[in-house]
Length: 577
Image (cartoon, rainbow, N blue to C red; front, side):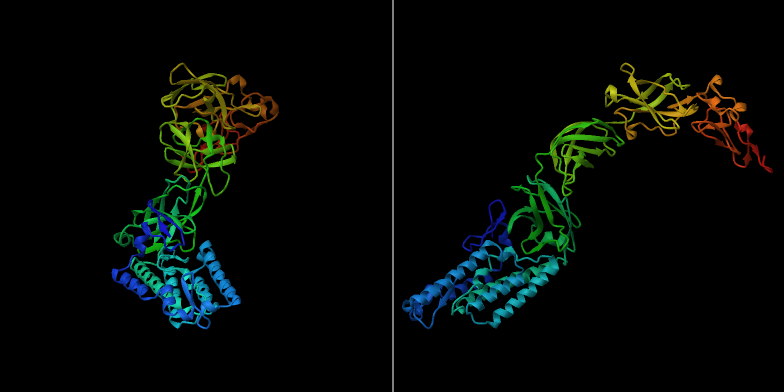
């Protein structure tokens, strides 16, 4: 492995390539150790030197190992023996090619060490108890490190000090390579011991427990926050710079700086990638690393939705308290559950429901009272450009209506303070709504000139065949007929309209019980209420006015007979005054 000038870690099994960039610091050791290792290599004779010292023993070169055929001089080998030796060499090269192709690197550390050990044994190498003991120590160290930082795969950053090919010995003189194998395993042991000690000093066992967001554009630029547990970030950053490693391929990483933003949170910005794929983001420093132990909280998905386009929305405005259902039209809306679509307005994200690839909806929450652009996002951060205009306005406040009472059919004028200040509604979207007892009635409205006054016609207030009287609220909508986007004045009195019953259109109480159909098209008389087909008596302890929508209860501790026409009909119970 090596790191290019941009800090991107690239993979390579070629041990002759220089290791540069962010990996240098993780592979440093003391000058004394480096000198000792270099001296050890200088003391070991090369294959050429062995050939000069033992010409009669017929030394031949097999990759990184020297294989000495002690029984038959090399120059005297028969064609059969030469062919057999060539097969061995070809087998060894095949083994190395398989390691270079990548499958060997994906083995767990213990398994990979066992495979390497068997390679030597199967090809005639002698058993070395020191190497076996060293391999067992490494297996324990790998396990210790996994318990501390969750890392269970073969550590790519050790490739410069430990070459797996060195264990692929063959021939009768496999022991010729054993010294170099032992030296490299000892170097690996040193680095593992140092990392275990460092992790323990940082408070580990540690883990990456959360990543937000865990998806981002393959163009890069997504700010990712990693939440860790167990790791003492004060000590970690005091030891030196901490980086995020963003996997691009097998042992191919982009290295970007990590910044601490909280007691247990660090952030980094994703680099650009070539395409959409599932990646991994882990934390690394010169002498330690941290990955998610088991819950996939270090997994990051780079997506490509550049073909997704938002073309239009309706309505084009929303009240600042929210509630408007926006219908979105566009192209290539994602439907996968792994790419949830969101609407975004001035940094506020709210979920979108995808109906098909060209249609979606989202309901506005409370939003800042400003104009802006509605955009789409799948991770709440990276928005798709361009957006479409969206106006956010405050509900106009009804200060007066005229007339404030009638029978239905009147032209009503509504004075709405603040109307048209931030948003000029389309004529077809301006509505009056009368909150009638048997169901709200919505009618078209119109702005009077350029004023803040709106006019609309009072609808009839009926229940079945009867007219209903009483006070009802009047509300306004500037963006069409959606229940949630009308104004709401609560129990205010400035937006109330009183429906009345004319005397000539009121049924006679004395006739109702005998001729129930005589009230059709009229108001029920006092003491009676309509069920839509006939007028019924109010029960005891209640009363009603003419045309009332419901019977009203008498005051506490009072009573009235059935069909009482007014509150004066209610009398105190015995003992009450």
